[in-house]
Length: 356
Image 1 (cartoon, helix red, strand yellow):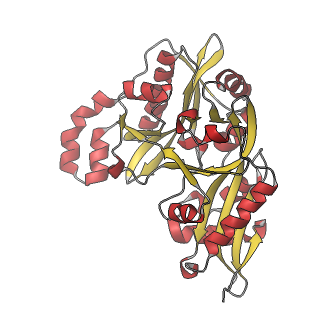
Image 2 (image 1 turned 45 degrees about the horizontal axis):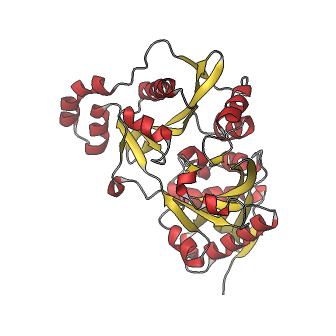
C-alpha cells in the first residue's frame, strides 16, 4: 500500500522539495533552495508552472516532485504555448512505487487541459527509459556538445590533479586565449535596455522554423533576474542595432571550470561580428576562471559552423556528461506536428532548457 498522495505543489511544501533535491545533488544545487524554486515556478511570464508533489503526510516529507514550465515556442509564423519538462525527483525510499509515473501522467493531463501544444525536454539517463516505456516522450534527436580549450593548464590541473603536467601545459595557455578583433561594438543586455531583446527577436525569429521565443519577458525571467545565477548577456551592435546575441555562464562541469554558452544566435550577414561576440563573452568568463568553453548546438545551424571556425570541436559521445537528447510529446496533432518531429527544423541550445 502506498504511503503518499499526489498534490499540486504549494509554496508551503517548497522546502520539502528543496530537501529532496539536496539529498540528490547537494545543497550547492539551485533546486535545493526555495528562493530559486519559488521564482522558477511562480514568476514565469508565460504562466505558472504545473507542479506535482507526492506527499507522505505521516512523515511530513516529499516522496517525489515534478514540474512542467510554460514556454512560448515559435513554430512557423505563430507562437504556441508549450511546457518544458524538468525538476523531476523520486525519493530513494519510494522507488518502485509508481511515484514518478503518477506525477508525470497527472502533469501531462493538466498541460493538455490548458491547451499546451506539446511537452519538450532533455530527460536524464534515469528518467528517459521511463518516459519511453510509458510512451510519454518520443526522441527527436541528439544534440552535440561542442568544446573549446581556454586554459590548458587549468584543465590539466582540474582533471588530472597534476601540478607537474599543469606547469608543462602553462606555456600553451596564451594560444587559446580568445581575443576579439578591435572595432566591434558590444552592449550588455540589462533590465534597463530590454527593448534590445524585442528588436533582435523581431529580426531573427524567422531564421529557423522552430525556436523558443527570445523576447524581453523570456530573457529577463530566464537570465537577468533568476536567483543564484549570474550570466554574461551581450549583443554585438551595428549602427545602434543588435546583430548577434550570446549568453554565457561560468560553472563546473565534470570537475572543470567551464564557460558554458547558454545561447548564441546571429542575423544572416553578420557572421564576423557574431564570432567576435563569442570571443568577447568566453574571454570574460576566462578572466573569471573558466578553463574550457562549451555549447550545445545542433550541427545543421549556421551558429554551429561559426563555433567550429573558432576552434570548437564536437565532443565524442563517450566523453559527454550524459546524452543530450531532445524529446517531445505532442498533444495537438495537425499543424506543425511534423515540423517539431524533424530535428533539422529546430534551433535549440542549453538556454532553452534550464540546467545552465
